[in-house]
Image (cartoon, rainbow, N blue to C red; front, side, top):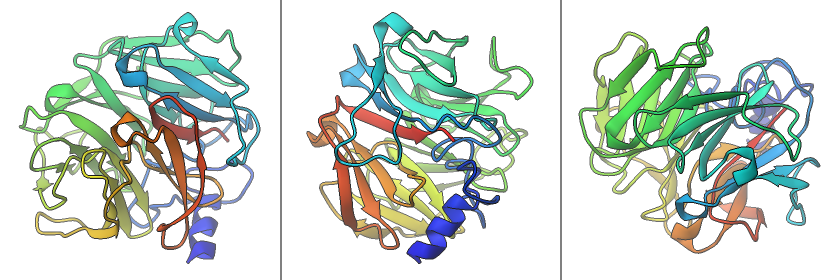
Length: 318
């Protein structure tokens, strides 16, 4: 399965430029979570950088920029982007579908920023947009529209032709619980994870939806990270420390399969271009590192990128 998963990741995942073809780790049902976002954008770039969002408890955070990939336990950032670059507390980072920009949900500023690639130490936002509520995660759907998960159960959409200015649409889960994670499957279905039961909401056709089409309350704790792989939606929780997955399709009665039952207080989940499941663990787990778990089971720790500052996200550019 490691060979199969890596083949899918490198054959597409929306994905790792120059390493093959065109699916994503969720190619059968899923995921711009890793397409146009975690393992490296889509159609352009060639910058070969990795980015860690250091949240630092909501202020004074930064983005660590790693110019040598693949990452190892010994990797250190070439430079960081912080206050001088307009950032306060980056809670999520995604690479756009064209591989030309990173997009940042800045919790501390309640803004969405875009930075042109490749980054330098003096990079400044090329786009700045105000979020209606505190932004925590963002994702691109398969059509290139940008969606932002926010406090108070809200999701804002910026359409592909208008990635600036006011949002085009706001979805609501029907709950005031905060949204901490977003993921799209390949069909464009939107999944949200957050605090309070039900912990997951599902929106079929979110571009035209006005309410969730389904919800699921079986995870048993706050969902803070989501990532698709073939036939599965991986789920992490900074509250319970459990790492597991749901087998697709997900219904209200679907039950998660645990991988690691405690101690993995995952934030934004993703996949490295080399196939590992990446799990940032910040202050909630008192670990301040990103763990890399080896395919196919994702229960064995390959290595950790340590000595970070409350990391919430890790993504790669092509």
